[in-house]
Image (cartoon, rainbow, N blue to C red; front, side):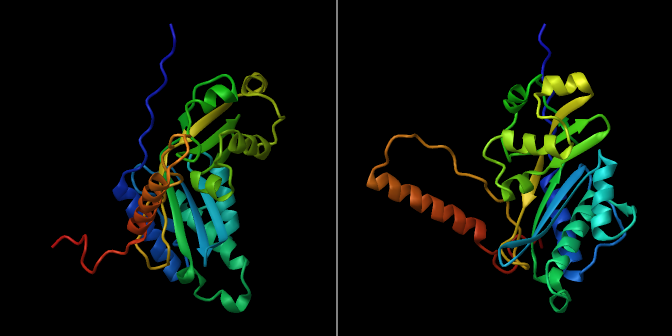
Length: 263
């Protein structure tokens, strides 16, 4: 009898994602991340990307399932392991990396000038398969993050990082990156499993980003829906272009004063 695949783990709620984003934004504006900052309910992984005028200055990530990821984030931020959750650790590491990228005279108040992209995700969900090809069938690149465990060591590729590093074209890119990160031989999953406990996981979450430091966050779209490969007529091309422009304009639209505020 075939073994049924486990149900997909739900990502954190939109409320949790927005709350985490606003909290992280306040840390950046203040220029520091507090030593005690627990994760919202349902958040077990996080990644932060900080940009200045569109250029990536710093990034950080943390996975609650892997203490080593948290220790690396703490080390990058120059702190000792503390009461920070994954969101705080990821943001602290990203901010420390961004500060290190600019001259000393430009470091004061840098956090408030950076835009934030934040990904919050649920606990890793095992992907079924004895080969990387089989595993990839249950995963859409960049629609979720990926994690790999070999023994007690983990490698984590958040969706935001895969897109920023152009590894989202297909699952082989991030999988090979994790194999290299874990210093494993270039073999298929079955061979790695024979040599030790190795598994691949989906890490499903929500990404929020902003176009300016004070702008309202939005959910970025990686790609438009696939269309037919048939050649477009001039009229169809104009319609498609208008739809793309309209979608982007809606995403970038700032809310009117008081919009979305409950009396």
